[in-house]
Image (cartoon, helix red, strand yellow):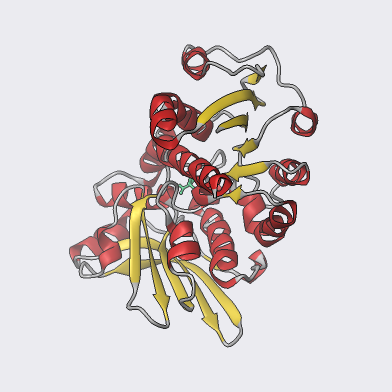
Amino acid sequence: MELRLFLVGFGNVGQGFARLLASRREWLIEEAYLSCRVVAITDWHYGTCIHPRGIDLEEALEAIRRGHSLSAKAEPTLPLIQTLEYDVLIELTPTNFKTGEPAYRHIRCALERGRHVITTNKGPMAHFLLELEELARRKGVCLGYEGTVLAGTPLIRLIRSHLRGAKIQKIEGIVNGTCNYILTRMAEGLDYHQALKEAQKHGYAEADPTVDVEGWDTAAKLMILSQVAFSRKLDPTHISRTGITGIRSEDIRQAGRNGGQWRLIGRLEAQKGHIRAVITPETLPGTHPLAHVKGTTNAVTIHTDCLSPITIMGPGAGRLETGFAVFSDLLQIHQRLRE
Ligand code: HSE
């Protein structure tokens, strides 16, 4: 089978995915019987490249590595989504936490056209996941968004597939890589600004890192998980949210002297017909499993009515790590099409 891909957004995640796709080309054909052809890439910064017969990804990646663009200027995105011939839209533009735009319009437009969509964009999924899933269902196409929470660590698939039928009561854990990285590095002696700078350099932080450190990114992920686990949309104004900006180096040293660690914890709890969502930094004792989750590693514990708590831990941010989520969603779509 062949799938034609259209990449909208060629930043950290887009390039991570392209690298994976290029390196697994033969594996995909020989082991998965899937041939992927990237027919277009567009990015507001790097420009637009359209090749119905397939773009050479290694060439495109190399051009960007050398500081070149794909074209002199980017073409308007929506008309391309409306008119190009492709099977899967891969929407990887920067997240807009307030409105989900313009990604929401991009995703809607492709689904309306009966195209499959994969995204790692948290804004549209936080606000419109249930609505977009309903649209995808009506159109008979797939919508993959594994990379919106915990990057390539398969939390969403775990909840949707493996825990189907178990009644989820509570979900809690560390879902922001940047904050966890900063708290870890501060415990190792760096000050807040040095640690944040490092997180930005590695490509973990959002374009505007205040959304990480003030807890907005965690809020968006809780909004996504609430829809995945409880089929309930959360109003962001109903989320109690405290970020990590108030934590001083002295607080971290003090916790360390007592064997503890500061962690930013997001928690969703089903309570008498409504979902309570709280984001707050907590000092965890050294005996707490989440105290040992370091750097950009994330970990989430799921409490159900029939199993003892299940914890999934793994990378929560990063180019290749999030690119892998896109790759895995692509394989999932392929599997669905073969059924
Ligand atoms: N800025 C996000 C984080 C990226 O640090 O977790 C992954 O969603």
